[in-house]
Amino acid sequence: MADDRRAPTKKGRGGAAPALSFVETLRWAWRQLTSMRTALFLLLLLALAAVPGSIVPQRSVDARAVQAYFERHPDLAPVLDKLGAFHVYTSVWFSAIYILLMVSLVGCIVPRISVYAKALRARPPRAPRNFSRLPASATYETTADVETVLADAAKAIGRARKDTVSETDDAGSVVAGEVRAETGYLRELGNLVFHVSLVVVLVGVASMSLLGYRGNAIVSEGSGFSNTLTQFDEFTAGGLFDTDDLPPFSLTLDDFEAKFELEGPQRGAPRSFVATGTVTDAPGDEPRPYELKVNHPLRVDGASVYLVGQGYAPVIRVTDGKGRVVFEDAVPFLPADATYTSNGVVKVPDARPEQLGFQGFFLPTAVSTGEEEIPVSAHPAAANPLLGLFAYYGDLGLDDGESQSVYVLDKDGLTQFMGDDGKPLRIMLTPGESVSLPDGAGTIEFVELRQFARFQFSAQPGVMVPLWGVSIGVIGLILSLTVRPRRTWVRARRREDGVTVVEIAALDRVPRSDVAQSVDDLAERLAGRTGHTGTDYDAASETGGAAQRTAGASRTSEDEG
Image (cartoon, rainbow, N blue to C red):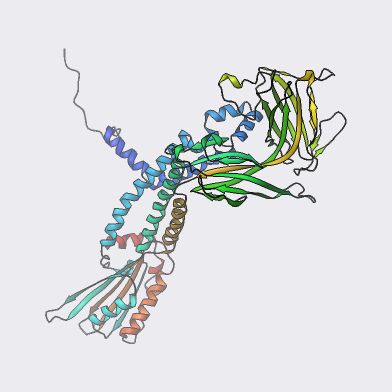
């Protein structure tokens, strides 16, 4: 059988390009990733990806707000949860963008550093042959010798990187030469500093997330807190943080003062929250007083304590059917609206013969809306406190070994107490009042009203790194925007009649409008130093419109240089 295989033919002019090999594909992908265009796109994408984190509540910040979001949006919340919307900054897709941006920036910066280092070592380029093709040039004649003109030109140019080259005749006299000068090297330095600062900021934020921790705890007046893992209501830590490294401090909340607007259109608006107490930096140390306000954290052993919320904690006393006091404590009720209508749960696992549970609301300033209507809160201040509860008995489910939220009552094993009218028993209490439960199950008493403060405890190593990165980046950005690189040449040659012809030209490497004026000024200064033949020199504005030439002429002069 004849072999039908044919030798490969070369690609014709209209044929398809050959496929890239695996290595070539990787090289192409790397070049695309490390391009400045890709870095800018990833930076924009990172900013857009962070938007859901400011719109949707985050578990690391407020887990209860996430739970409330699930209750308000039972259909949407599970979908958002699968997409990582409730933990945006630790999600896979956000981390992928973050890492790609860091790689892209590093890939952009490293080659540019080597290019900039070579540019620093390089000398200014030689002058183009034809100055009239540059955007701005000037010419004048003088009786001064070439050597004097070149020396004065170097002084007149001022601070710049300069080179002076000259030609001599057989007698050793300088007959021609030029001064080459270049300024604006700080522009590229500022550009590099700005991009390096972006990497510093990204690394700083990543280190804060990996090496730090954040936790929340509610502390009622008269109670305390120890900085141990079991004391937190919510706790999140970075992947490289060891919980054994928690600072061993403790604090007590002696008093909490909340002030609200009493009159006017902003009635009920918060005015100030102040928590006072004592803090012990380490076991065995003397307690020291503290005063904690919003946006004024308490610093303790590398950690920061922030005041992030407050509410009311009624002190509730419960006796069981045997007459024993089985519960007496301040129970935080979590605010649900601007008037501090609050919800809470009381669990009494030690009650006998059966466990007791209570679920209800607290109103700081209760106002009745009718005989049959449930009262509402008219103001967040505690002017007329009222505690409303439903009571349950049975099994609280605490003995099953599964953890439960202290703010959720599991009713699967509970039975609700009913009133004489056959409806669920509703308990309404003001401070100092008590109510007996049906069938001799015990009593519940609203002893007094206290307040609670919600503290956030956090440690973020390297928190100053992003700040310094941003500060230095701003300086680099200012340099890159204000510094304008320019090349200037002064060429002098002696004619046979002994007159020296001086030519001056400049070229901006970024668009500017003052290049013609600067050439005129340099020509005037240099002519003033060396003198001229008495005829006016040809300035940039008189060179056939050279100052109005397009960037194409600039590129041509660059090629000639």
